Each structure stands twice: as structure tokens, then as C-alpha cells.
Length: 550
Image (cartoon, rainbow, N blue to C red; front, side, top):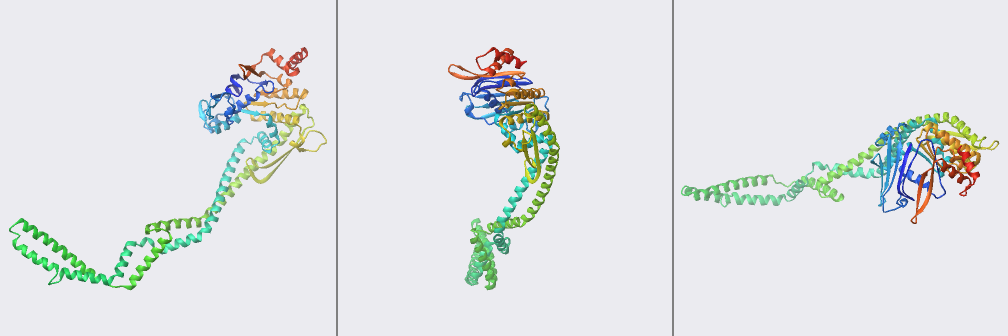
């Protein structure tokens, strides 16, 4: 339950704190006094998105704090699931900074708005004026049936299964789209890959091929050059080697006379040895060089294939071509493997569908079992509210289409009078009937949902007189098992409260501000009398107010 609500710098409120108690708390005030401001502040505490325009003084921080006593409501798991610190006396704080930024805290720990929104439904059920229209929505109607059926855990299981089914379906659709796209490119990619593979790139050395080509293509010129070089080095009469050897003999005769001459001899000897090696290798090379047209053709063919591939793929090396080949292989392999993946996901989708369908069937069975009880309770509750002939008809059928709450399609039909045909709520129920039906639903749900707090914002719209008395009685009965706050304009309902808060506006220093006041017994008599007869109090109105309170 809410034990206290503190509001600073919000709308017309400068700084107030209202303490709340168990039972039925009535909130009254003239139209425009600021009753909706209280609901707006509470909505922020429960995770509504903040708006800087709702701040009274934009240059200052707006702070709203809600204090909750929740020790008897077994909410530890809910806190744990949403990564929140549990405390039996929980404090939720919202701040709106002058910059427009909003912050939220649970027990002084910063939290994301989504965490607050996940916790809120377990703390307070706020019924606003426009929410009565929700009664005609299939989603709301199904939530009521599920509450009576005790389907919370089963719904949780179904939603998890449905989420898995949706994810698998989306993945399958993407794979099929990928296959359609890839299939169009498969032939071309396969052609490119085979072309590169046939070139046997990993066994090609471009530099060696180019060198071999130049050698084979110029074999005669190379042979002639090598022969002439060998002749110049090693010809008996005029070869360089012969001349150098004669010089070595001459230096050998004098090398013992001086270290300098010894160095000359050593250096010349080393040169002769090196030239002899060169001459020998030139001779071998000359013998190995021969014109080979067939080999030249083969080398040239390999080079031309290589050059064409490099030009086609806009690269300049064999390594780059190999990299392209590997990527093409991966693309082709992936495309060819898509069928296998698609088959796997289709089987998985089918299994998930069957699992979710079984859970949806269980939901359907439990809903069908709960409907007679709900119908009976609603009609019994509406009987004293001036609708003795109210009847509901719940038409629940299973479909093949998955929805967030199962596969059921629900149609709720209603008639308020004997002899009249059933029709959809939104077409056959008046505004006053809608209010009474919503109260009946909330009264029935109160026994099943075990909420700490319910807030009614003028749920009594469209009713008066004895019906208002009966509605007040139902609210008072509900408040015995939960905290109930009711904003009302009806004196009959106001008189049933265990506590009474008046909301009023006051002008001070040309500034209008909203204030709250917890009324004592005498003040309640005056407030209810004014609700009955206006500001000019009469003895009859006061007497009537006292009678209502008694």
C-alpha cells in the first residue's frame, strides 16, 4: 500500500506531502482544483515518461516520492527478476531536472524506466476516467478472464514460447530471402571460383614464371652472350684468367720481400678463384640454355591466364587472387548450405509451433472453466447496482493465429434488460452502465489479483442516487482487503470513506497553488454538505451530510 506521497515543484504544487492509510480514502475537490495533478504525480512514480512542461518552476528540480509498505505482498521475486533492491518499505523517487532529463530511483538505487514500469503493476492499479473505455477491448476482457483462471504462470510460459517461435520464424524468413538473393549470384560466383581454382594459383610463382619466360624467349641471345663472356675470361691466349695467373706468378716471386707484396698476391689469388668460379658457372649455364618452343608456349600460356585473371579482378598479385578465390569458395559453400539451414529452421519452427499450441490449448481450457464463474460474479455484483437483468455472454473460440496472449478470439456480449438481444458492450451499454460494469469487474478482480492499492478516478461517472450508495458500498467492501483511493464528486461515495482528503487551490502573492488537507469529522460534514447543496450551506444539507456519514 501507499503510505505517503511527497510532491515538490510539480504542476500547481509547490511542496506537499500526503500520508495515506489502509481502507477507503476519498479525494474530493472542485473541478480544476488539482485532483488530476495527484494522479499525474503518482503516474510518474509508476513509470510514466516525464515532461518538463509539467514542472511548476522550470529552473528548479521537480521531485516526486512514493512510499510503499509491501511486506505482506510477496514481491521479492518481482524485484529480483527486474534487478531491483527489495525493501519491505520501498521508496520510489522520480526527478525531473531543469535540463528536462528524468531520473528514477528505487530504494535510492538508480533504475531504468523500463524496470519501474515492470514493477508498477504489482504496486498500484490506477483506473482513470478514460480507462472505462478499455472494458470494450478484447485484450482487457481476456486479462480479466486470465486473472480468474489463474493463468499468470501459464501465460508467462506461452509468451516465452511465442517469442522463440517469432524469432525462429524471422530467422527462417531471412534465410529464405538470403537464399533467393544468393541463388541469383550462385552461377556467376561458381564460374568465377572454378576459373580461379583451375588456374591452380597456389602452385604458381609469378616471378619465376616471368623469369622463365624471358630466359626461354631470349635463349639464343643468352647463349651467345655467355659463350663470349666465357671466352673473354678463360681463353688460353687472351682470357682474363690466363693474364691474371701470369701476374700471380710474378707477384709470387716477390711476395716474401714485403707484406705489401704479400697482400697483392693474396688479393689477386682470391680474385682468380672467384673468376674461375664465375667462368665455370657461366660455362654450365651456357650448356643448359637451349631453345624450347614447347616449354616457352606452356610458360607463356600460364602467364597469360594469370594476367587475365589479375585484370578481371583488378589485382596485381597471385596472393590477392588466392584471397578472392577463398572468398568465392565461402560464398558458394554458404549458398549451397542454405537449404540445409532452412530445413533445420523449418523443423525447429514446426516444433516450437506445436509446443506453443499446446500451451495455448491449456490457456483455452482454463479460460473456458473460469468464464461461468466470472459471468456469475459480474451479474451478482451488478444486481444491486440497478442492473438486475444484466447478462453477459462470453464467446471464446480458438484460432490458428498466434497472439501475445494465446490463440483465442473473444467476443463479449451484453444486455441490460430482459427480452433484448445481446450486443457488443460499446454498442449496447450506456456510460453509467459502463461505469458500473467496470466497478463490478474491479470488485471481482480484487479477490484474485490481491493488489496492494487500487485508485479510482471518478469511476462513478454517470450514476447518482441509490445506485451511488450501492457503488460506495462495494468500494467500502473492497477496501477491507486492500487500500482503495477514490476521486469522486458524489457525496454518497464520499461519505463511505474511512479517510477524506480535500484538494483545493489558493492564490497567494498572485501565484496559484494546489493544496491538500486531511479532513476531520466536522470538516467532512461541511465538505459533503457542500457537495450536496453548494457553498451556501443550509441546515438541511448539513443534516443530510451527517445522515450520509452515519
